[in-house]
Image (cartoon, rainbow, N blue to C red; front, top):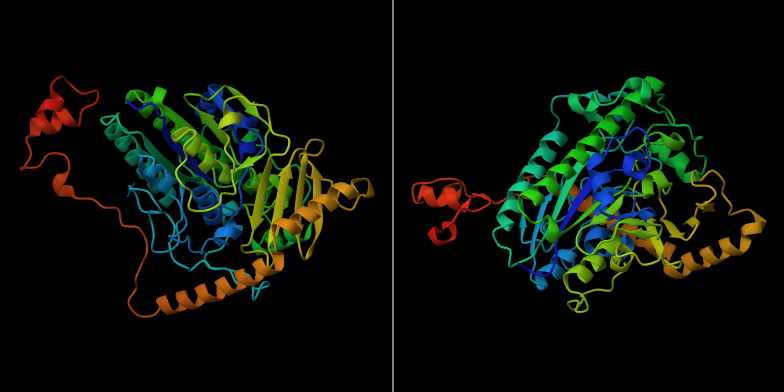
Length: 509
């Protein structure tokens, strides 16, 4: 048995912590996440580094901000030359495995993982490239609109349910296989697509919520310029939805959150059954949140907290039970894993990290008053970069074409009062404005985003002509070596695939 912990990262998609019982929601049922938090550390000010799927996931993998690795949007390539935590953990002797969604764009569909057990749920090419050259033209074919709200309800199956069932199955099977090799630690990412819209749930989860109990959004419509742009982009400004449709969408989202919670339970139960739970640190998080009608908005792509905040719960050996108010973000997970895997002896890093380790905070250290969470948005719905700094009680948002926003998250967690224009907060706002100017060259970033988009649109146009060539991942599978075949001794197969093993199985294999 290794003295280093196994690491299992369970990632949801578009799950806002505000809509979990673990973070205080009175209706949503998340008993397995509650149980994980009851024996681990819950981070209450965890943020995505970009409120969009692919950029957030690339930052998570690399421990670097979106603008550093040019992962601007859902069709930006994640370069194969960027080191990830999978590369570093492999150097440290870990088996590495990905099952589920990671939305890698480009021909490299592994990014350091030794194996990948499923394909991805979304395309890996440049088709979803935004166009900042025509910012007022609404994207249609692949972009969000209000149909997900209007058509919310139940179904026996969907492509998302098919995908997540496969993800859970392959993860559990691989965990049992890892249990046979206890001398080598493993790191596995199990990444689901729920509760991401469409808001469609299995009936048994839908029925766990009474229609009369579903809470409707109560916050006023956000009126900052980017929120207005976003409302137009998703058609929320032009397409009206009824209270019944809003309640149905939220009910389905709650049901799908409970579905994901059940998957957490399945993975943790498998670790128990494989006798690995005491040697494994479990991380639960999401790539970003969901506004779910709050402030008159839906989905993500906003710097408001329902879009930017994520759940982050750590549990396992060396993790104390408690909660932390320290601001943190997805880029902090890579250095945290390195502290767990190679304490005091990190492998040589191939790139500067933007994150910091949360290992001390997870062990019960006091919150760092200077700790920050940084956010960037360079995707659709805007034609200029948007930057966010969350530190202490303050959250600051800056975009070249918009008035700055400053919120006191302690006194105003709903982000209802912008203090940036208040003379009483002039010094605080000026300090944050200066920091944004030092950290980011907004004009240069915008120039690079435009150039990247133009190149990718040209590539996609060319690749759409003639013979189709896809980058989508094809899972490797050799059925001739599975289960029982004629070149095998079936008694050996029966013994070696059984867990717990029976006496003599190792010798027969």
